[in-house]
Length: 165
Image 1 (cartoon, rainbow, N blue to C red):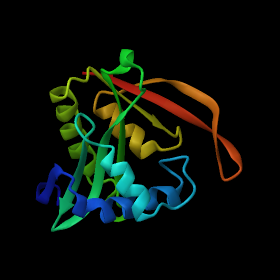
Image 2 (cartoon, helix red, strand yellow):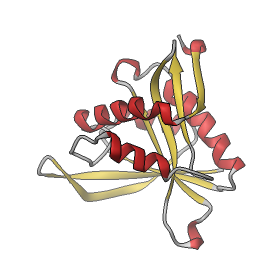
Image 3 (cartoon, helix red, strand yellow):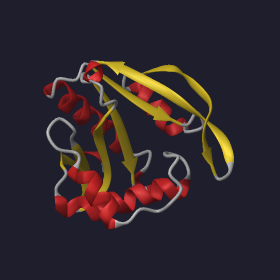
């Protein structure tokens, strides 16, 4: 199945699929501190802010969007212009099938082409599948923020990871 996946720049027509996959991540409580399901206007606004250096790419399998990834602004201070925060979300039915790796390879290429020297990400320490992928792709654990956010009324830790490009 891996060879039939196509990675390409996201377009406005992909927003509904991106939204559906993002909402799965919210519902599954494995990828974000967000707890409220998002609507189309939220995702359209988010998408519109990803212009220029901040890219959104999607993974397509047999005409269906099955994953997406983005380069996000890490911090608005100019000292951090070379650092990109990243997001990767895979549809439930396609997790663990190599799609995240393909998205990360393309995202890294996009980051280099757009003048970033480093990518950072934040993940839950219990997200073993994600961490395994990031470590395999050359990211290193920077550290763990203890009680960094609240999810379903409980404090959760958040792990910071980075990759120097």
